[in-house]
Structures are given as C-alpha cells and as structure tokens.
Image (cartoon, rainbow, N blue to C red; front, side, top):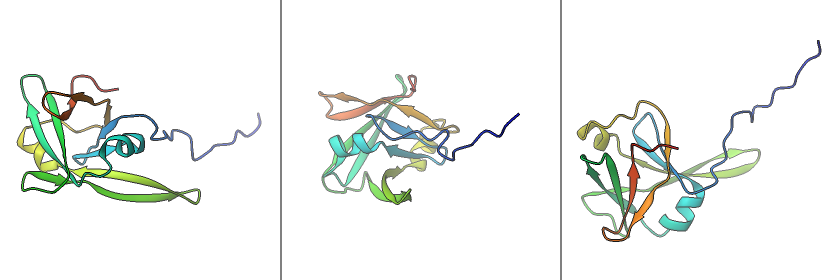
Amino acid sequence: MGFEPFSRAYGYRPRKGFFLSITKNGSILFSTDFYQKYMSGYKGIELLYDKSRNVIGLKPVKELTEAAYPIRQSGKVQKGKKIPLTIVYMATFFKYFEIDHSTLKRYIPTWDEKENLFEIDLNAPM
C-alpha cells in the first residue's frame, strides 16, 4: 500500500458567501463577502434579542454609542495572502441572555426592513 498525501488545507472552508459565524468564545465573525457588501463603513453594531423567537438582531451603526459593540478587523496571513477577519466580541451579550454558544455555528442573516437590522435565527444554523 502506497503513501497518501495529506494537505493542511483539508477541512479549510473559505469565507465566501453571505453568512456569520458564532464562535465558542462568544464572538461573531462576519464572512468577508458579508462584511464588504453590508458592513463596511459602519463602526459598530447594536445588539438586540427576541427571546420568544430566539433571534438576535444586529443593527449597524455609523458611530459608536454606549450600546454599540465595535466591529474589529484584523487578519491572518495564509500562503502569503492576508485574509481579512472581521469580528465583534460579545460574550457578555450571550451570557446575559443565556444564549448557548458552546459550538461554532454559521448562520445566514436576513434583513428586517421595518426594524433596519439583520436577524440571526438561532433555530436555523447552516
């Protein structure tokens, strides 16, 4: 039986498409496509929660307020190319509303025209 090569890229998922990830440490990661189309130009998001529907509301804001969480950008270098990483740290929000974030999950947010915010339906991960 011969050797089979293994690539470190196995299991790597590109951040293409319009989605968000909720991480184990209580952060939201924006996919690059989602950030560039909908969130660039905003400095933060205000967080809301509808307990009866189990839905998080993300309201983009141009200027930071007391209620807004800042949108942070960083990146990592992979194969000589910088991959942008856009994140909002919000562990206290999850703790306050007792929202489980023990596993990484991805969601496709929807725009609520009436409320002017993105909704994350926690009942419908990707």
